[in-house]
Length: 122
Length: 212
Image (cartoon, rainbow over all chains, first blue to last red; front, side, top):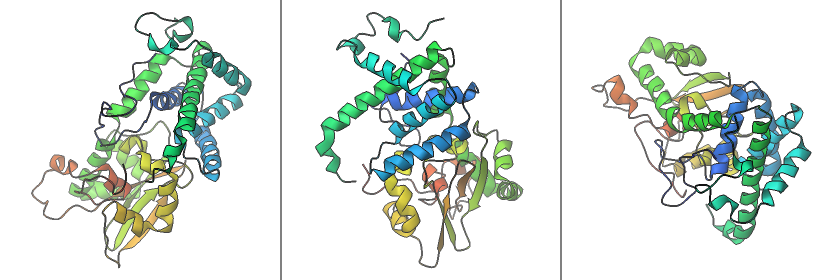
């Protein structure tokens, strides 16, 4: 897993230079970085992503849900689907597969590495 | 903020867990397809968290305060003038700088989502993305500014600028009085992020009222 510099929450969360933490949880910064990396690699355009985000945020607003990064994540999925990078079905299947991992799978990264977590696969 | 959502802690935890899984899932698919590298994701997160931030915008503002020619270029073409200082976005959006003064105070919002001048301000604060701010600053800007402890005279006109994917606004705050003796570098320290969004005045740093 990437070495994120932000603690999830609480007093150990490091302050930012401008006084606010932009992310409340590592997955939020992850999906932000993932989007930026896809744009950098010319796999997505920011403009297309922005338009998808507007749609998702608008839908969340309509239901009264304040889930900005969740909307971001879904917008990224929309763009990846449109661009033919990842299908909605494939995304859902992988999510379910990850959810089916045994409890405690994510508490022992320091001890050993699972194949499905091994992001350094070159 | 209210604490009504404490009733939904369980649902919230579940949706958080699902959200984290969905992000992990899409990353793993994209990585396996060779479309993106985890090391680049790490680097970009670090870049936005550490290197790109409101200090960039503060340098732009301080230069505009001390160099009238630069100020004019900044107002004429924000994108180019900001690029003179080496700041520009991968997003390629147009930057428009709106000056405070002469009875006008500017404040920036993105009513549709969270468009924000990232190259000069970094990542947007949580409140900027909240449905509450996005709706209320348009409807009752004076009340919202008051919550940031920004009290403006009644005769000051408040202009609210709605950012979009194509145009990002940056507020050029007024230089605080009695700062003639300060250098450009010293002035940078007076330019807080919130002053460049327009919810505070330059030289004022503080937490938003009633916001945890």
